[in-house]
Image (cartoon, one colour):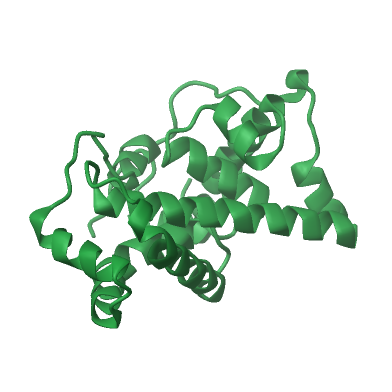
Length: 213
């Protein structure tokens, strides 16, 4: 992919677009029926069709490929177990993607609890409630950077779990801070602060790794 300038247009290119008016594609009808009947061939076909796109989603929420694969496998198991609940009036790909994101959120919750139990200070700080006044407000337009989408994904994997998850849910899933707070079990102020810090850290990582001014 060619390099692009400005972080917002780059994020827009990375962000999937769902209109909410899709209907089940004819090509997927037989596959959905097959998966409901627990046919291995249909399940394998669905896995092969969506592996690449869904792996890309999982990579955004994790720190490495192995972790992403774990979430991907867990999510596909959920897909095949609940495919009979799929609403055929919507997009099959969009439905699968929502399961991937929800599985990533579940992973975050487990990670959050594990960090708290282990008493890791840095992790506790990331997840702790932060006063609204401590939030970092967005200041003007994002700086222009000449980076590739793959570079942004790699940089995102270096963010802490809290920053990475909030950033993904706000930027890519277009959730509100209230929705993010409810999903992650944090308060709105924490969501806002983590998003601002995630953006700031992402810029620092990209500048350092690509020697940008």
